[in-house]
Image (cartoon, rainbow, N blue to C red; front, top):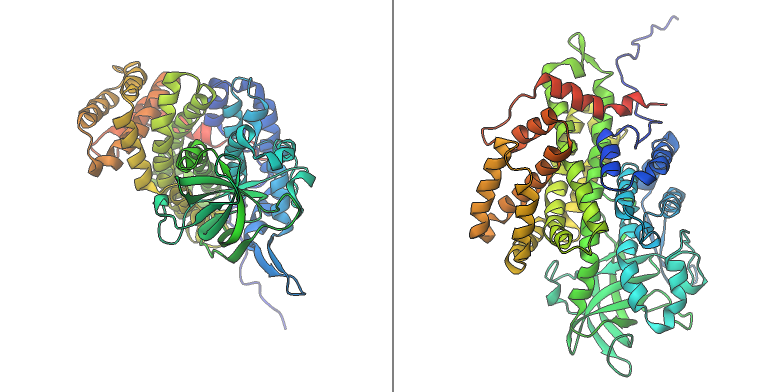
Length: 548
């Protein structure tokens, strides 16, 4: 019997593998050089090549396909409260630590552009696997706080805390080559309202900074439960306190932290988030009683900025995958990239990323220059504004990229399904959108210098674009009597104007003008000029050109 071949596979694009994630991103390359980290471009190119390789991308897939497993007991019935990860997770964590994403600005504190270089590395790693960034960002944010106030019994932890090594062994921190720090703030009844926390802390002997307290309570989201220690909030006689909660006590005994279950999340599958009970666990007070929120907020701005960087990296990868697809796929006699509607839509997304990249790396420069009063004001208002706008935009952005691939994008074989599920976590974690907008309004009300900073930032480019000028006048009107109900509008306008200001300063005039028209023109969507489409697509399609 003769069998007839029923079909031949054709017009199916090959996946985007073995591209250089750094060299293929023109906006990122320009931002890194412009904002003071030009010294790092050679290493960033090497990291970009390594992370864009098929082997690295497969590690990201495996880490999410095989999520962590909670091990509550050993075979003999003894409590373990441990988490088992797929080997892919550990390899990804090794790469993050080796590339110093958790500590670069602390190791290179005197070097201009260290925050910018670290932000670029964070964005590159986010394109491969986002869950591993959670322990990295918390460790990064906790390191300066603990370096200044590590409880005396744990002074030996400072060396491995600053190490470039990843060490997953279950043993006391002083015996390890590298450490991870987690956080635990929210409880069942409170969420963002951490002042309603019910976990209580009683001193073992005397009260005060660096003293041990006994903790009884719970955490509803205990991030990265396998960390060597957590910073948590608990009620004390003097108010909310911040506590250093180690996994092992100084005598080597496991602390009384009970892991009840791991959260079953739609995205962020590779990363473990737990519900935890403190059954008389011992924690050491950081700072004074009643200063817990102030201590945690020292970390909060850094982790919020990382949320924006993480969403940005996911958006960049989604755009790269979509671009690579539309350059190969044909429909109605032409490649998709040559179809007018698709060309406009992809072009608009690429143009959006130009402004977003410029804004985020201006913000990274502010972190490098935070000794300046002007830059501190910039950080105070634009860090929550960036988290709100970038993380919210990422959700719709990923859906648009998925739609460019059609049904293929909606299947798990595509990276875009995972990216789409991953997007909402950065908008929720570290304060959801409304919390970020309230933070912006609070900054505007409590820090008069912020208005001076905004005038200096925006007046410098006033007169170059009529859409920018009109939007700035409208925002100034709102800022005279800001209302809470307008918090989202004000926050979004601030981020849009900050992006536009950067493009008006540094981008080609046609590109900057088109961005302002696309984003700031209230008359609705306008067609992008063909020359701008050519320019922005050329800068964004390096993923095709640099394919190895």
